Amino acid sequence: ERHQQLSRFSGPGRTKDGVPVALLANIGTPDDAEKAAVQDVEGVGLFRTEFLYLDRPSAPTVEEQTSTYVSVLRPFGSRRVVVRTLDAGADKPLQFAPSGEEENPALGVRGLRLAQRTETLLTDQLTALAAAAAQCDADVWVMAPMVATPEDARWFAARARAAGLPKVGVMVEVPSAALRSTQVLADVDFASIGTNDLTQYALAADRMLGELAGLLDPWQPAVLDLIASTTRGAGESVSVGVCGEAAGDPLLALVLVGMGITSLSMAPGKVAAVRAALAMHDHARCVEMAVAARAAEDPRAARAAVVDLLAEEA
Ligand code: PEP
Ligand code: MG
Image (cartoon, rainbow, N blue to C red; front, side, top):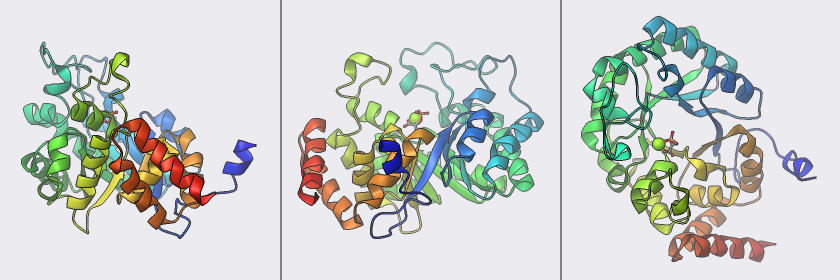
């Protein structure tokens, strides 16, 4: 029955009053791409590329990467595919570019920092992606993980544009980038908020520790404040999406849209419920929900405040 209810809605995401919110899939392999592409999604909001690099003695060649990227892009036709560059580090070590022993891998040489240490890792990836894009119709966007400063963003954007990629962005998953989004996003076309890491770093709570689940909740008002800071500081021309777990929670999705988020990327199985939630509420209502959630003291109260507003509507 729930399935029937959800399938009343289809196609591009939009609020009840028609404000578009792109509904995208998170994927990690060509197999995921084939499965996601036949779902009702507007494309990919996060293609994690780590699988290409892990558990092998040498880095993948440009040719090997190109053919893998083609197999991911093709199934999506002309739809958007947002590719994230390599996010390896001490927790996901590479045999051919060891990060060394780090006491705190989450705070170490991971994501873009590894690319800054071994630049060919990034430039080969960008070259391969541009070559694949040239062979496909997909609308290819590229973004870097673990961007902390305006200099990081500029460093990445210069290389991505030099490779010929037209849509260049950064992930906002470090609080410093969320707090200073005007400066960090000054030279990019889009941002995608990674709420998994943003929550980990905002609450100083290791995302691998189940014991800290209470802190590791994207409904934490401090996390909502960082998301609001990101959208407030982003210029008119910079679109801001969310690609962490938060995007797949239908109630939280409303709050995110109320804070100015214009795309949501999630496990494909979660898209229908998020689409249905959006279709039932006007954008102004989402703004009210965001205000109420941010006024709350803790995650439970934030959620309850949104539920109360929904009950009023019914
Ligand atoms: C995130 O940090 O929210 C994210 C989407 O990236 P990952 O989970 O791969 O770190
Ligand atoms: Mg992350």
